[in-house]
Structure formats: structure tokens, C-alpha cells
Length: 184
Image (cartoon, one colour):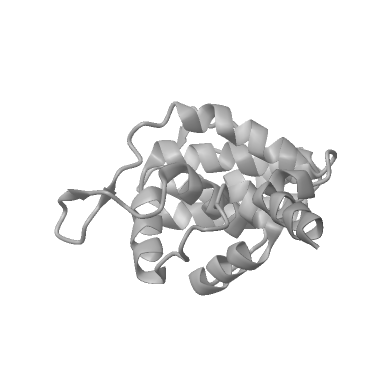
């Protein structure tokens, strides 16, 4: 009996063991982990603008946002529930089993702060592109997610066909259709 209990506990403590080797999210996670390590400015600010320690680690927040865009999860509450109930999502985000569930208000505030930063939106764009290459998203879904990311950005918008080039606001719709045509 003790051996069974020990085996089930050790198995659940390592969610990575539960994710198949060839799973597409493994490719996406590897692709986002390297550039994310270079992002040192993911700090959380309280509503009054003062820097604060956020209960959500910056890397976890970025991976959670990526899941939200990859799987088109509209509500923050639903995303947090899915992370806490899915071994795959827990592994992808990097949430420990003993970690307390995130507060949805803190998550929403931190999400807004992150999505307003151009460099972090570009990082999400790169990860979404990896999701497309790994077969997790169709070209239409990628274009839709790019438009969602653009809503949070400041003008001028980022040209997703070439992330280093800036596009004037009236060229936004044209850029999405160009990207869509190239990806088909």
C-alpha cells in the first residue's frame, strides 16, 4: 500500500513525466524559454504605479498568456481553472502542485501591464508562430491572435511578417492579410 501511495505521489510531483515526448507544446515551450530568459523587465506594478512583488512569477505569466492565446481562452478565470486542473497546462506554465491558485484580479492587472510592452508582445508573437509551425494553430487562428495582441499595443502596430519593421496604423488590416497569404 505504501509503495502505491509513494509511486502516485512521485509521479504527480513531476508533471513533465506526464507530457508525451512528441507533444507540440514541448516545442513551443523550448522556443519561448530561451528568449524569455533575456526579459528582465517583467516586473509587476501595483495600481498606484509602485513596483511590487507579484505572486505570479514573470515566466509563468508569459507562459499562461501564451496558453490563453494558443487555445483562445477568453476569460482569465477559465484560464486559471484550466491551468489548475490540467497536468499539461501546469507543466507548460511551470506551476507547482503545492502552489496556491492565482487571484484573478492580480492576474488581470499583470496581464494588462505585460501586453502593453512591445517587446513582450513580440515575444508572444514569436511563440505563436512556433505554435503554428508545431501544428497547434491554423493560419486563420494565428492572424486572429495577432489582432488581439494588437489591441493592447500602442501605435504604430508591429508588422508580424517582419517583427522589426513598424507599420502605420492604416496598414494594419493589410498586414494581417499579407501574413495570412504567406502562411497558407
